[in-house]
Length: 314
Image (cartoon, rainbow, N blue to C red; front, side):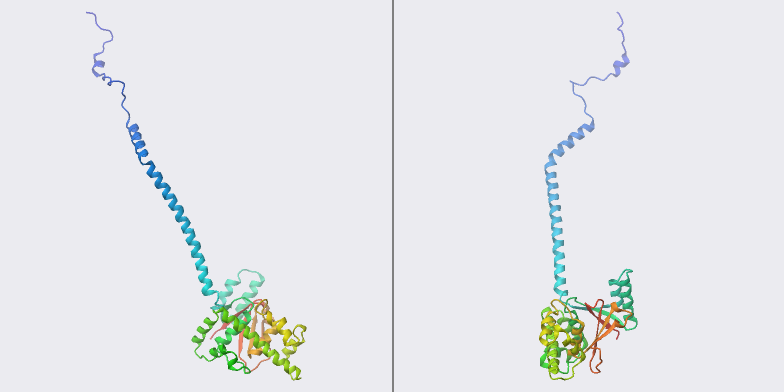
């Protein structure tokens, strides 16, 4: 019997049988991908819906946060305006600290102001400053605040019934109680402005009184001679129409007005003019002549337009 060619028993022994049909075994990665694909198709809808909801929620909360931030800022500003805007004379602050905040830098004006404030602190014993609202009533406000806070008496020519509010303050001996009353008064804008108009009326009253003395050829203080020598204030009516009516509305007190105010209230107004530091005009008085029985009150100004209140060491 003839032998078969190329017969390899060992190869036949280890040869794997063919798989049934044409089906092939898939690798494990393909099975995993198919499972993930099925799972993704199953959860894709809910996941995308959740993402859309989360994005919408974040957008909503962002808008809500922005809205609440704007509302909070508005309410904060409103409360500040409500409770602080009418406080026309602020609490005491350290003089040199105030100067350091307001006059930084190395400009000639800043250096001058720092030296002027140091002069007030070292030589004139001013330790604090009260900032006064900067409007056209600020000079009247600064003077009236000091008169009331110090409990100064009425001018000798004025009767108590002429200005009841003044007598309420001058009759209080407790400084703390008087200070609290001042804070309430200078937080009431309506009442405050009525008092300023009353001060203007007092000034007019004094001008009328002195003008009557002029007609009677009596001696009058030199400041009134200066007043009546001006064409725009040659008599009480022109003084009222051309000057007094505008105080508080479009202008503040001029020097002649400050003289009349001091004379009318029987106080000597001392003003530190910081822009005039190292000159003879650094300190000025209204009126210039000293009256022994008249109390002295003090103001300071950086520009001869706006006034603050200096507080001296006790």
